[in-house]
Amino acid sequence: MNQLSIFICVALILLGCQGKDSRQPDQAKPNILFIMSDDHAYQAISAYSDRLIQTPNIDRLATEGMLFTNACVTNSICAPSRAVILTGKHSHINGKIDNMFPFDTTQITFPQILQDNGYQTAMFGKLHFGNNPKGFDQFKILPGQGTYYNPDFITKYDGRIRIEGYTTDLITEMTLDWLEEERNSDQPFLLMYLHKAPHREWLPAKRHYKEFIKKSFPEPETLFDDYKGRGRAAREAEMNLLTHMNWAGDSKIPPEVMDELGIAQTAGWDKAAYQREVMRQTEEQKSAWDNVYNPMVESFRKAYPEMNNEDLMKWRYQRYMQDYLGSIASVDEGVGRVLEYLDQNNLTDNTLVVYTSDQGFYLGEHGWFDKRFIYNESFKTPLLVRWPGVIEPGSKNTQMVQNLDFAQTFLEAADIQAPEDMQGESLIPLFKGQTEPFRDAVYYHYYEFPSVHMVKRHYGIVTEEFKLAHFYYDIDEWELYDRKKDLFEMNNVIDDPNYEEVAITLKRQLQDLRAYYQDSPELDQYYIDKYNELGRNEM
Ligand code: SGN
Ligand code: CA
Image 1 (cartoon, rainbow, N blue to C red):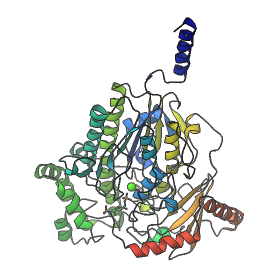
Image 2 (cartoon, protein in one colour; image 1 turned 90 degrees about the vertical axis):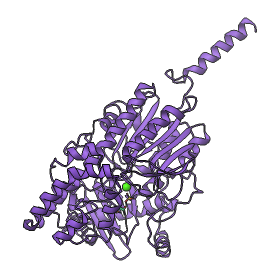
Image 3 (cartoon, helix red, strand yellow; image 1 turned 45 degrees about the horizontal axis):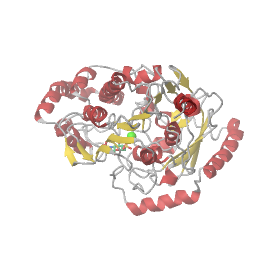
């Protein structure tokens, strides 16, 4: 090699290095750590509001990254939300419209594309699809909803296994073990760390129930909502804390104490849920549980005969929050341990970390628990993203982003062209600080009716100022909310003459949006027919 060629070679090498990340010269593409919990309301993350709980570890992602205050889902229910995330397509396109419909596994999901492009991929925790994930080098997933104690896992290599312990901690440990023992440092990774908590029936770990059972929490302003300003859908939903929450399964009043007090089951599976979850503990776990829960049961037993409905509602709200928030405490600790691992192993700088939930959740607002509705608490979802060098630490974003956007975001982060038929938008311009409007409206469509909680089918449009929804199937009602004037969505103004013009414009916009995303009345009918064909057995 003569001097000139040596010079050219050195120059080329130097040029080649320029665009690369100097921290990790062998790996230009970012790692992706996708953390998702199940039913984690943004109201229960202190980066959003510290009214209920402190979540210092999850909050780190906001302090070191970006907090999205208007992130929402396209269909507020578990498995459909996961299908939207994986495919980057609305439910009516990917076909997983509710928890019961099968997921068509011939569809391409973003993890498959990442895997094909050199990513090492792993998934731990709750998927809730009824089938195994494709595109993963390693997975250990809970069957169906999973359980809080001593869970079973479906594994890629070892079949179905049962592990003694507390599920949230086990999922964290699997995630850490994979990072430590299986991660290949020559490849970028996609790691999906998916908690079951804080999904119903909200069983905290021992270290947390001891603490949380003693706490009491501020009530939401709308705890005693009588649904008068809304439509039939809100009145007929079965998710009221007083009338629909399970006494045994949720409030942890043992079945024999219910019998003694003459309390009937709220749902047919009220006592069975207690059996399934609380009684799944080992003798040792159960005796620790009894030490803490028995005094609570005893004081309820004494107080119950004197309690009126208002007292009961208040009591049930506190009981709910103690267990729900207690379950979140372990999620927050787990997130802390995983972020710490990234720090200790020089991975923080080149890892895009997302924390989100599969949807929002009611924490007593409107007297409710559960989700499903287009109304704020269930429609919105937490979203915190950290990506050093790309996202300005401590930034806040108010744009309307959706779970539909993740697939394209991750593909763009990995410098891969997303398939044309994905329906979201990459969030990367927002990560980089773009402030121009991202989109002016989002589309929403919920299907699972008739089913548990009886939330009617509806689709709608949400803009910064308004929310318009059409409830259909066994009803034909429109609801319109002024998001700026009616923060709690208590007054449906669809028949208010002052909103006549707004309603006309929004209905037209909604029709356009449906056409844009290829949804239609024919598809609505198609899914109704299929729903009737399939029967209602949840996975
Ligand atoms: C179960 C719960 C419901 C919950 C659905 C869906 N009942 O049926 O309260 O809405 O799951 O949740 S339970 O008594 O069996 O816990 S989802 O997160 O999977 O969509
Ligand atoms: Ca969920």
